[in-house]
Image (cartoon, rainbow, N blue to C red; front, side, top):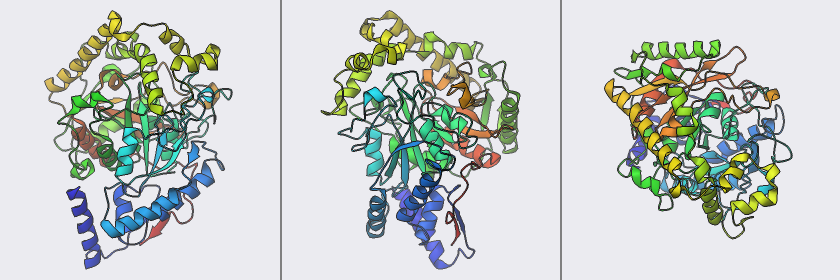
Length: 524
């Protein structure tokens, strides 16, 4: 990454030449990769120190204090790995912006030597023989997998039933009485509590986007095909995606640049040939400006009724965009009942037909120590009364290529995607914007992880890129997320729009239930 090394050289030269005369403040709660790199180049920080700071936070706040309960497996070698990466950086330079950076990984993504539980006790805790492709890429970039974090009960009721779930409820750091969402809830909560620099989640119907909205994070799902899914516990390959969950757009761009790429085990990535990042997209964001950007307000996707505080935050976000120089086209109409159409069982659920074959393919990849040879064997061993009805139904379905309904759903999925893209082209837009969820997170006392009636699966059923951004907070300090949506393979431009909005709005604030610890803020 030539541009990245050039950036580091310029930064270090400026420091050594005395052109940077004033001291700087490092704050772990808001630190981006740029802040970490600058502090490290100045000799005030190291990967080893960074890991230790995060470990202290985990000790203080995950199982103690508010007991966020997001982490179920901690990398006991993380400090030693950090020391090795520090030495490598001194000897050879950084591999990438992720060199020596700690990352949280969702418990559906295989990390060699770490357990994968899928949040379901009968699944056991198999140790994958191989890394998921995205993990291989992260490790090659120099990233440190600091921990595996919780997901919801993947095969059962989708919650935290203690009879089925190994760890129980994860709490929302912004208000611990409320849900952090599904099913990348552990990633969302841990990054909101700044237990690591970066987080990795997965998404089928919103599982990167919901917890990002609920935890005031930047959550990105790239165009379907840009990121491999091999080595990830599946729900359905048509809609499954992995995506970054971070506290800044810069960090999301840097993480996504490493994650994306062709994979022989996941040939949907062949559709993205010619569109993969050829260098670090974070370095290509440019100045964070909205000048000249055209944003369309997709009001057809707004739920009615909706929470008044959530809608007020959304309207304020539109004002922030205008103040930043963006041209707002409001409303943009497709002429359909878009919310119902994109969230209906007709277009929104290809995965029932894919569930069994995709799960069996995953189990084969898991390795010789896998607990079951087939998903059917696992479900029968667990007891059908323990598993979600979707799996029972899926076991009775024939192979997908023989099902006309499955083929029709794919056809409608493409039609819906083309409708959105035609709308963007018609109005010459850089992005569409909408409130991702029009209701705030539910209270944990309700037993719900998210509000089912408040549905937005637009990006999920189309495979279009989407970015969740912090959009403000309700009176109960519950985060509100807004969503930018773009055309296929407009991912970098969408990141630029989000970057401009991030600076114009300055919406994100740290969670108060997990305050800074001594040593996390320092001058250098």
